[in-house]
Image (cartoon, rainbow, N blue to C red; front, side):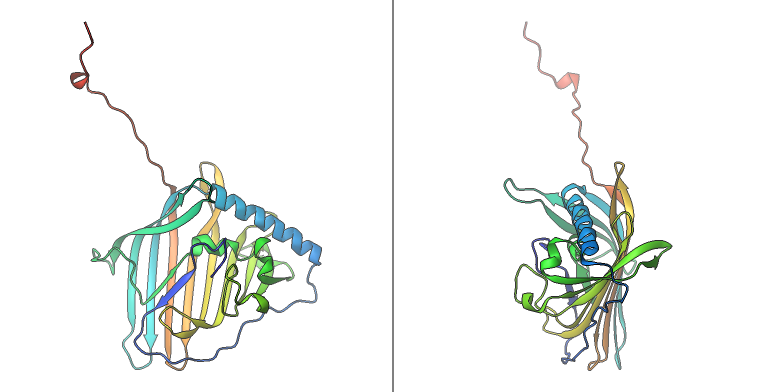
Length: 282
């Protein structure tokens, strides 16, 4: 994805030797007859933008437990699965005169329940960038890139939510400040009252990945509140990515779960040894 708010790109990698291109039908948002007015939509987007600015400006450096299951299934071939347990980190870097940048990293603890031989997370499918770009998918600043449509309020996880369907505008496909360059659409479920996303889904029907493969790529993020020093932020709890190439009968899937969020702090103190202190002048 491409945008100022999408500074660290949402990236997906699929590993397979040969694939053929396959057409896929785009998921288009359907506007309900009970859709709210444009003024209500703008008000909701403004609240979402305020929450986005708060997250980008105030979320502290943190770490969490990350459990990833990555699968590849293909007809006529043995399945492939990699299970990775890591310590995930989100850290902030600040350069004078520039906006703060959030960086994702991880320290891998186990791969398939064994001590890893590499410091990099392994495929067959990898997804990154969600902690930075996922929260900005539905916001006031992204309304220049997406058409948003309100749908009637409903229930999700026992909460009243406001569904917002969205589709990338055709005339921004080549705009480097917007997601793209492929057509994409999705839906977000926003908690009524707090205006935080509970779930965001995206579908890219003819995605060209960095290996040159064309796939139907869908991903979703489920969010939950996390407290850091009595401040509440809505963080990913589960991230699911799936890519399908029907002509090659191949399906890649990636499921990551996050728990035990903690603020990342560095504590230091000075310990003086009286025996090593310089002698006082006489």
